[in-house]
Length: 145
Image: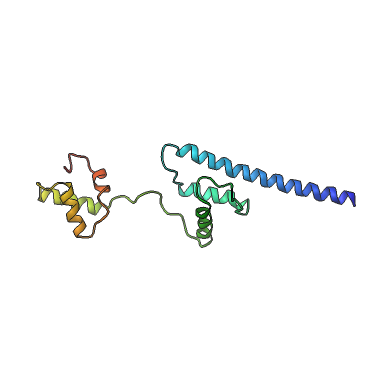
């Protein structure tokens, strides 16, 4: 009887130690992500997200109080998305479409007196509403004044 109790205790201890190892790996990976992202916002790449989820799987995704780089709700949404087979999207803003760039340059060539504000206003009229910040970044001051 005493031997069975010792064996059961040893099995429980081994299970807790294994869980502790996975928790440490989970936290260590998040720290690596934080260190690499300190220069700006913490936006996980699809690979980082998948790795974090894979480590969380080893913990049955019971990571409340252990996830630091994203909100727990975000982590749980990732789990639901993964279960649905949804792949993580790209990170960051979509690049400005080549067609829009061409349109801006064409408008600049045909209307040399127009400045950036006027061109953006005309683009808004035809349904391109999101270029206020993207077009100036895409072109140097010599391209569009």
